[in-house]
Image (cartoon, one colour):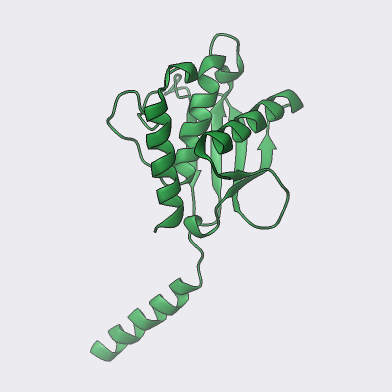
Length: 166
């Protein structure tokens, strides 16, 4: 019995060592868009440039090379039971999927789009919600222009730390 358990643990560890974790594949790269027109894609690529500039490093690649943590971005209507949901992220070992709510691309909500974009990329990097009001990873969003330099510094510090550690 003990021998079988030990064999199972060794096999599990050996097999597990061959699996790349998300933090091993950074920087991220956007591999596809769903339901976004060219203007919306261009707008999001502007946010990528802004994130990279604010962080002082490349968090998201803009090239089509084969390396990087693949991210898919789509625009969807929010679920009927959560009509105010601005974004949703599904993070997996090999990729990440970001859903941005369609209402963010309207004139009345566009001030929130970059905030939600950054927040959802934070989830791709493994960040969870935090309780600090005014933080980018706070569960509810604010207009991008209201975030302080401290909020950005905290976000990018957490983001880059999560890229390096399991």
